[in-house]
Image 1 (tube, one colour):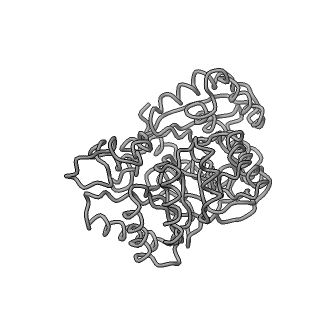
Image 2 (image 1 turned 135 degrees about the vertical axis):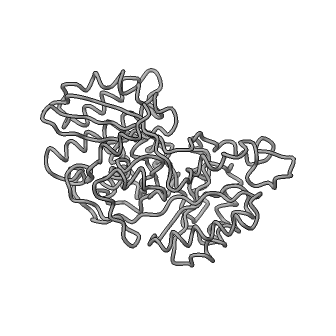
Image 3 (image 1 turned 120 degrees about the vertical axis):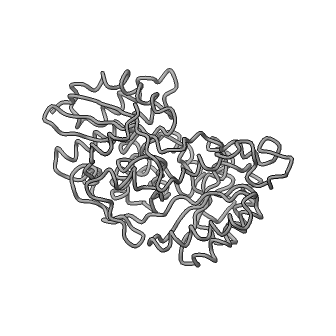
Length: 410
């Protein structure tokens, strides 16, 4: 069996019911307005501390990603998702120009040799995260899909076996409430939390990290809306410095939050280590860390209580399984991070989660219809806070190719 073709295309899919991703929505109205200040305040994001502009990553108004389709000479098709919410043409070019010529004629079951080959191609030019790793991720996921289909078994069996047949998931994510939105903003937050509970989720995540008093109020609004039985994780996207993160972490402990995610800039190993030692609340992170070596630095330092690798950012299923197994040596659980993308991305995360002994939970996007179940012949099986893992071969999903291609823009 040999690789015959490698195809990539960028898709742009609207979010459910006109909703936008939290990142696009957060900055949609005025990119300089500080979300924690009233509309008539003279300050903006450049004048206030902590500097919230540091987590103003680019996000489009629609869900964009790069799809990878690999076909073998005996007709098996594997699907991958290379994430890339902005600049998808870059990851597409990396695959088409650099990687595809290296793949033709290779045995798709040689997954690790292929991974190492692709990772080494740009070693001298910056290769350890970003477009390069997202491109590798999409290819790696597609190769695992082929392997499972060729051997007529789910990917989790090839990763060492099935630890669980259902994955605990948390809904992600409720957006920050702007100061300028007034009482209507708090009411909308409470209503959204109640809707999540009614859908059957047992946990969800909320974006905070603006102001301690407002963040405390947000947690109390949410607790009042859903009760104590629903777990609430907090994501601040690196908004704090160490002193502020320490105060925020103590406050979140008091309010019963599940974890504090990315309290510091992702590069700040020293302060993550200090913070994890200081706080009792779970210090989570890792969505911006993209290979086993950088994760080892954080794990060896005791810098995180929960790691959140991303299967479409951190080198695909191969590298993420290595990372989560590494974390298990240190006694640290993992929770797959899922950002913007398609059902392929979600299915790959489930396969990895099913095989990991140290799984805590898995992120599950709230907006998943057009880019999720609508491109599948059978929807994901979500019930009572869990996604039940398919026992079908490969990633366990069947792509409706015509529906997916209808969203292609490049």
